[in-house]
Every structure is written in structure tokens, then in C-alpha cells.
Length: 483
Image 1 (cartoon, one colour):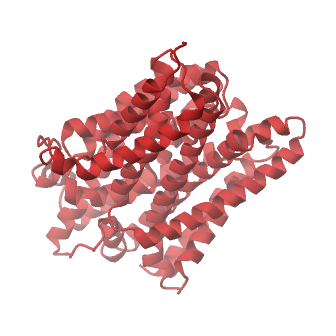
Image 2: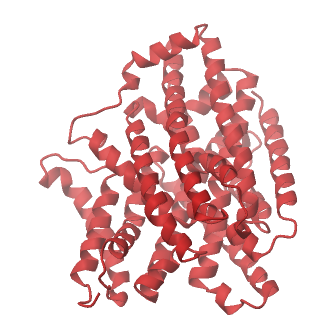
Image 3: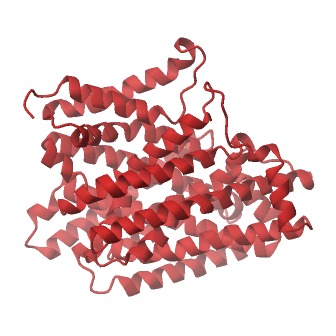
């Protein structure tokens, strides 16, 4: 497939996104940007959040990951369902009861200003790293298969993407993203299903034969019993539960969309619907991954060096023009959905939690908007820098790196919220930042030396649980005597 055709598809898709942005951002104000004026239809939010939850990580990394880990990721997905139930029944009612714009305001109400700022800072770090991971994955694929052909440097490619995302989210914010996510979800899912059909036709087999072939292969292995393995099913299930709680329920990016719903009941409908839909959707992605490896074996195709390039390599070089166009549209959808809501939530959190612009300029809409624009641009520049830094150090599948980093950065948030919701104790507010630093450091050493001191036990994604538990213990040991 020619790079010119790929680039043309990119331009057409971008034009559609900007058209939606123009339509949705008319008469938008600061409340539109932050919480969509509480007018977002819950079913639109739920459908759009499928794409936001999947992003480029699921689109590219999970199909490639099947070659190393089989269907074991599906156990994490089952854990997601339990995690979403906790969010729906525990966190959302609390957020709506307190009428929050930033969810970290809860920490200020419960513990004090140091806790509030600590929670916000850890979110900023977590989301910047997470958004950069996702964006890096997608842009690096486009760089290899398209922009290298035009001799465009990687840093220019990244800057162009972030510049476009900044422009279409600058005015409407969450009000715009609710609708662009809907488009991006549609194209992403459509691309995966279309690719599966094309692969089956290329292999000249029936769909039932493809399903049978995947089922009978080692690629479909799901439950791994070995307790020392990172892929042990108990570890993965519990990790899925807590990953969802922290990366959705304690994440301003994901919760900002829920808080844009008109009421709590609609937000809960959104969460329940999303959790149920993600099961078959992720199963389809895993099926695609297995099918890609069976296709490679069928036609003796050598696997690329990076597992993240398995899907794009076959789509661009072996399946024909139609498959290439389908893939590029799905990939661009993943690229935009990876960063647009992240950029909006980062702007929201930094503006409200760190700078407190909503309090300082409550009566000056124009000045608040002007300063919000400055923050928006600054966040784009930071993400660009982190993506370029990540290109230097990247050496494994992005999905694995994403969950590992989440274990370190979201752990203190998990401990803080658990201590606030499960106990009636007061924390020593000024000690909270110290505890939030010590817990990840201890977690690192525990993870690093676990195989030596725990008889070969290898810590995987349960690192998040360990980190959160250490933060909780630290808060308990330094608690105030009053409740």
C-alpha cells in the first residue's frame, strides 16, 4: 500500500474530526470544556468510552501480545467487570454527591490540602505517562510505514499530531470529545472486524474454521496456573479489578466523561453498559491477534522484531489496499482517542487542582478561558517531550510497560482513596506526600528482588495492589488519633 494513499486517508479522517469539533464547540464555555454542562447523553458516553478504554494499546499491542501470552489477557478483562461495579456503586455516588468537577477535590475535603495536591500531582504524572505511551505506540507505527517514506523526522510527526489534537479540543473540551470518541470507536471496531474478514478470505477458509483453528492452537491458552508466572490467572484477575478502579475510577480523564452525564443514574448506566460491552470487544481483539499469527504461519511470514508491529506489518504488506486503508483509519482513530481526552483532563486537573483557576477567576469567564488555553498548550508540549523521551528507552510491548508504570503511579492514589473510604481516621495531611513517595520506592525493591527472596515468585501487574497496600499501611501507621 502506497504511503500517499495512507496519508490521504489520514487527511480525510482529520477533516471529519475537525468538522465535529466545529459543530460541537459552538457557544462552548468553560463549563462545556470541563464537564460538558452536564448534558452528555449516557448512551453516547458509554459507546464513546469503548474507544477511549481501548485506544491504540488494544488496537495494536494486544493482538501482537497474543504471540507471547496467548489469551491470558482475557482474565484481566473479566477483572475489569468487577472493577467497574465498584466504580458504579462506590465512587460515582460519592463524586455526584459532592458535585465535583475534579475528582481529587475529594481528597482535600477528606484529608486536607497536601493530600489534595498529592492526588492531583500523581494523576498528572500517571496520565502524562499513559497518554504518551499510547500516543507513542500509534505514531511510531505511522512513522515506520508512512512518514519515514516522506523523510519526515519522528519529532515532527509527533508535533503535528499533538498540534491537531490541541486545535480540535481547545475550545469544546469534553463536550467535543464525547462525540469524537463515538466516531473513533466506530472506526476502530469496524477496522478490526473488517480485517478479520479479509484475513479469513485470504486464507480461503470459513469463519467457523478460523474460530476452530484459533481454539485448537496454543495461542488460545487462557488460564495459567503456575503461581510464579506473571500470567497466573489469579494475579491477572485481581490486577484487572484494581487496574480498572485506579485507571478509570480514580482517573480524571475517564471520570470527567462520566461527570458530564446529567445525573448519577445515567452515569451508572454508562459504567454498567461499558463493562459488559468490553468483554466481547476485547475477545475480538484477542481473536484477531491469534488469527494474525496463524496467517503468518500459513504463509511463512517472518515476525517483525517488535510484537507491536505484527498487525501493521501484515495489514500494510500482505492483505492488500483495502485492508491497508481499513487499518490506517482504525489506527488514526486510536491515535486521536489516545490523546484528546487525556489532554483535556490534564488541562482540567492542572487548571482546577494546581492553579485553582476556577476559584481565582470565578467571576471572569474570559480570563479563565485565556489561562486555560495557556495550560492546554503547555500540556501538549509536555506530552510531546515525554513521547520523544520514551522513543529512546522503549524496549518491550507498550501494553506491558503501561500497566507496569500504572502500578507505580496509581498505587498511592489507590491507597489514599481506600483509606478515605474504608476508614474514619484522619491522616496527617503533611505526611501524605512523603508516604506517596515511599510506597512506590518500596514497591520497586519488592518487585526487583521478589524472585530472589520469594522462591522464584515473579511480581507482575499485582504491583499496583502491593503499592496501594503500602500507601494504605503508611497512612494507617501515621494516622491521627481522632476520627
